[in-house]
Length: 146
Image (cartoon, rainbow, N blue to C red; front, side, top):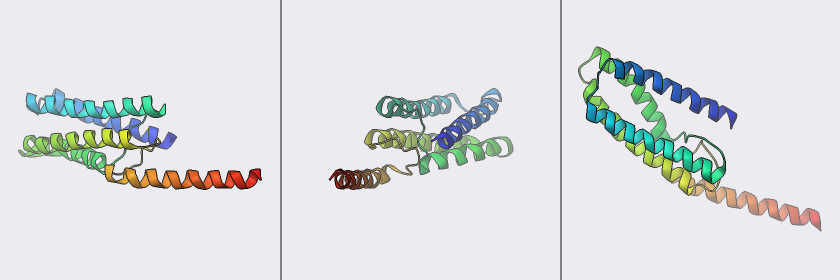
Protein backbone atom coordinates (compact mmCIF):
# COMPACT_ATOMS: atom_id res chain seq x y z
CA UNK A 1 0.00 0.00 0.00
CA UNK A 2 2.94 2.34 0.66
CA UNK A 3 4.15 1.90 -2.91
CA UNK A 4 0.72 2.82 -4.27
CA UNK A 5 0.58 5.90 -2.03
CA UNK A 6 4.02 7.04 -3.16
CA UNK A 7 3.03 6.43 -6.78
CA UNK A 8 -0.13 8.49 -6.32
CA UNK A 9 1.84 11.31 -4.67
CA UNK A 10 4.32 11.26 -7.55
CA UNK A 11 1.49 11.39 -10.07
CA UNK A 12 -0.10 14.37 -8.34
CA UNK A 13 3.19 16.27 -8.20
CA UNK A 14 3.88 15.53 -11.88
CA UNK A 15 0.41 16.72 -12.89
CA UNK A 16 0.79 19.90 -10.84
CA UNK A 17 4.15 20.67 -12.44
CA UNK A 18 2.84 20.07 -15.96
CA UNK A 19 -0.25 22.16 -15.38
CA UNK A 20 1.75 24.98 -13.82
CA UNK A 21 3.76 25.27 -17.04
CA UNK A 22 0.62 25.18 -19.17
CA UNK A 23 -1.31 27.63 -16.99
CA UNK A 24 1.40 30.26 -16.73
CA UNK A 25 2.01 30.17 -20.47
CA UNK A 26 -1.74 30.65 -21.07
CA UNK A 27 -1.93 27.90 -23.62
CA UNK A 28 -5.53 26.81 -23.04
CA UNK A 29 -8.97 28.33 -23.23
CA UNK A 30 -10.94 29.21 -20.07
CA UNK A 31 -13.71 26.66 -20.69
CA UNK A 32 -11.08 23.93 -21.01
CA UNK A 33 -9.66 24.86 -17.61
CA UNK A 34 -13.09 24.86 -16.01
CA UNK A 35 -13.99 21.48 -17.50
CA UNK A 36 -10.65 19.97 -16.50
CA UNK A 37 -10.83 21.26 -12.92
CA UNK A 38 -14.37 19.89 -12.54
CA UNK A 39 -13.21 16.51 -13.82
CA UNK A 40 -10.26 16.50 -11.40
CA UNK A 41 -12.58 17.31 -8.50
CA UNK A 42 -14.23 13.93 -9.10
CA UNK A 43 -10.85 12.29 -8.44
CA UNK A 44 -10.66 14.14 -5.14
CA UNK A 45 -14.19 13.03 -4.31
CA UNK A 46 -13.22 9.41 -5.03
CA UNK A 47 -10.24 9.73 -2.66
CA UNK A 48 -12.47 11.23 0.07
CA UNK A 49 -15.02 8.45 -0.36
CA UNK A 50 -12.19 5.91 -0.05
CA UNK A 51 -11.00 7.57 3.14
CA UNK A 52 -14.47 7.59 4.70
CA UNK A 53 -15.32 4.06 3.57
CA UNK A 54 -11.98 2.27 4.16
CA UNK A 55 -10.10 4.66 6.48
CA UNK A 56 -7.36 4.77 3.83
CA UNK A 57 -6.59 7.69 1.57
CA UNK A 58 -5.71 6.50 -1.93
CA UNK A 59 -6.23 7.24 -5.59
CA UNK A 60 -7.45 4.51 -7.93
CA UNK A 61 -4.94 3.43 -10.59
CA UNK A 62 -7.36 2.38 -13.34
CA UNK A 63 -6.66 2.06 -17.04
CA UNK A 64 -8.48 5.33 -17.69
CA UNK A 65 -6.23 7.09 -15.16
CA UNK A 66 -3.12 5.69 -16.83
CA UNK A 67 -4.37 6.87 -20.23
CA UNK A 68 -5.11 10.28 -18.73
CA UNK A 69 -1.59 10.57 -17.32
CA UNK A 70 0.00 9.65 -20.65
CA UNK A 71 -2.27 12.08 -22.50
CA UNK A 72 -1.38 14.93 -20.15
CA UNK A 73 2.30 14.25 -20.65
CA UNK A 74 1.87 14.27 -24.44
CA UNK A 75 -0.24 17.45 -24.22
CA UNK A 76 2.67 19.56 -22.99
CA UNK A 77 4.67 18.71 -26.12
CA UNK A 78 1.70 19.19 -28.43
CA UNK A 79 0.98 22.62 -26.96
CA UNK A 80 4.53 23.86 -27.35
CA UNK A 81 5.41 22.34 -30.72
CA UNK A 82 2.16 22.02 -32.69
CA UNK A 83 -1.16 23.76 -33.21
CA UNK A 84 -3.35 20.77 -32.36
CA UNK A 85 -2.63 20.88 -28.62
CA UNK A 86 -5.65 23.05 -27.82
CA UNK A 87 -7.91 20.62 -29.69
CA UNK A 88 -6.24 17.66 -27.96
CA UNK A 89 -7.24 19.26 -24.65
CA UNK A 90 -10.89 18.53 -25.41
CA UNK A 91 -9.98 14.85 -25.61
CA UNK A 92 -8.12 15.11 -22.30
CA UNK A 93 -11.10 16.80 -20.63
CA UNK A 94 -13.36 14.01 -21.86
CA UNK A 95 -10.92 11.37 -20.66
CA UNK A 96 -10.55 13.12 -17.29
CA UNK A 97 -14.34 13.11 -16.88
CA UNK A 98 -14.57 9.39 -17.68
CA UNK A 99 -11.61 8.59 -15.41
CA UNK A 100 -13.11 10.57 -12.54
CA UNK A 101 -16.47 8.85 -12.81
CA UNK A 102 -14.67 5.50 -13.13
CA UNK A 103 -12.70 6.20 -9.93
CA UNK A 104 -15.82 7.15 -7.97
CA UNK A 105 -17.66 4.02 -9.14
CA UNK A 106 -14.69 1.77 -8.35
CA UNK A 107 -14.42 3.10 -4.79
CA UNK A 108 -18.19 2.99 -4.20
CA UNK A 109 -18.58 -0.56 -5.52
CA UNK A 110 -15.47 -2.06 -3.90
CA UNK A 111 -15.78 -4.13 -0.73
CA UNK A 112 -12.19 -3.39 0.34
CA UNK A 113 -9.48 -0.82 -0.40
CA UNK A 114 -7.64 -1.74 -3.57
CA UNK A 115 -6.00 1.05 -5.60
CA UNK A 116 -4.85 -1.44 -8.26
CA UNK A 117 -8.33 -2.09 -9.71
CA UNK A 118 -8.01 -1.49 -13.44
CA UNK A 119 -11.65 -0.91 -14.33
CA UNK A 120 -15.10 -0.61 -12.85
CA UNK A 121 -15.86 -3.90 -14.64
CA UNK A 122 -13.17 -5.66 -12.57
CA UNK A 123 -14.71 -4.71 -9.21
CA UNK A 124 -17.32 -7.50 -9.24
CA UNK A 125 -14.66 -10.13 -9.92
CA UNK A 126 -12.46 -8.86 -7.09
CA UNK A 127 -15.43 -8.72 -4.69
CA UNK A 128 -16.31 -12.34 -5.56
CA UNK A 129 -12.72 -13.46 -4.95
CA UNK A 130 -12.74 -11.65 -1.61
CA UNK A 131 -15.92 -13.52 -0.57
CA UNK A 132 -14.37 -16.87 -1.60
CA UNK A 133 -11.17 -16.23 0.34
CA UNK A 134 -13.13 -15.15 3.43
CA UNK A 135 -15.29 -18.27 3.34
CA UNK A 136 -12.17 -20.44 2.99
CA UNK A 137 -10.57 -18.69 5.96
CA UNK A 138 -13.72 -19.22 8.03
CA UNK A 139 -13.77 -22.93 7.12
CA UNK A 140 -10.08 -23.27 8.08
CA UNK A 141 -10.79 -21.48 11.38
CA UNK A 142 -13.63 -23.92 12.16
CA UNK A 143 -11.36 -26.87 11.37
CA UNK A 144 -8.65 -25.60 13.73
CA UNK A 145 -11.17 -24.95 16.51
CA UNK A 146 -12.47 -28.53 16.46
